[in-house]
Length: 174
Image (cartoon, rainbow, N blue to C red; front, side, top):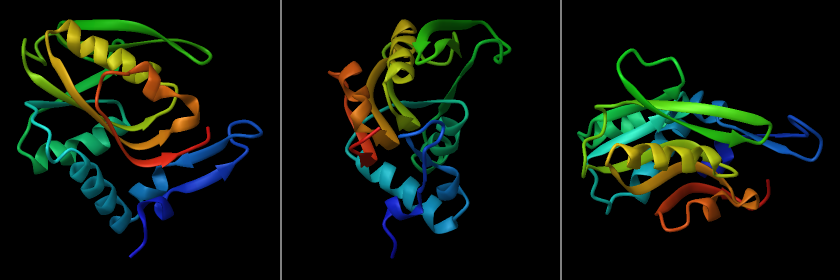
């Protein structure tokens, strides 16, 4: 049986020279790879008690939904600004080359609910930190974060110090 890392296609010098792009689509396009990814992420948080899963578009949806389904938990969306139809809360945050805004429905997380955040990747940690703040602004308690891949060289883990972060794959570089 292949290791999970073997399903991830690594593309050198993309989007710029010296960067190795870790392509999640190669995991999704292989039934065994996708199955292993979901199983590995679930295994990482099997001891965690949570009420709801939150995930950002689009790859957080891809990995969060099957975990929510398998564990009979609700799934709430975190989306780019202007994509949700009901009343929302939002947060602005910095990207490497600009700014972004994410939103959640105001009623998607209830005060005191324990929330697991699921995403495909943590790099610099800016998006993850913003998601934590957004959930907490609704009164939710972030009890864990699980990602498929962590780019440890970008030190995203340091931005969310104090929160449990589980990574199915850790790449030491950027």
